[in-house]
Image (cartoon, rainbow, N blue to C red; front, top):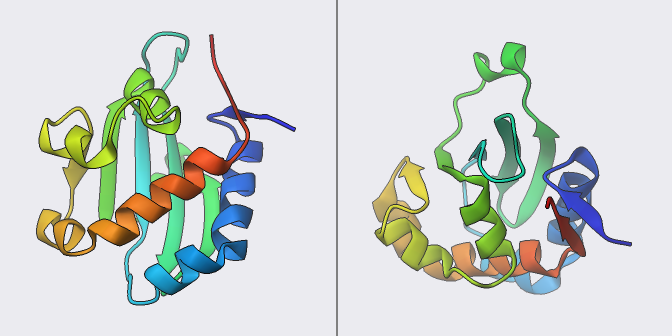
Length: 138
């Protein structure tokens, strides 16, 4: 079954993938930091969306779509911001996530040094997202 990105169903499928993937658990065993994806309206996405993932030592402890009330209560270690089409291109393996960060097609708020020291974790996190059966908005 394909899940529409972005949606709560896709996010829960991604959460399940992260928590069931032995390779991710092993590679991310020292990762500490929650992430919020700030998906900016672009192309078929007409309103902004924010996805939150609480990542801790190879486990995703929480994953949810952020509403306006919740946003003020969150202080994620990382906020990754980009137009919808750039997130979609990363999920479709058309845009390398590290290249996207370096060229600012994917903007990072948080410690870029921590991200760079943990490139294997970042890349495996993206691999898990790419392995979720995804249907993109058109």
